[in-house]
Image (spheres, rainbow, N blue to C red):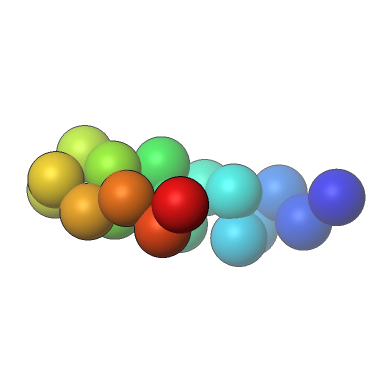
Length: 20
């Protein structure tokens, strides 16, 4: 797993962006 990438995804989700 990549904690840093996951953290970034969490931040993006917070801004309303979903990588999925």
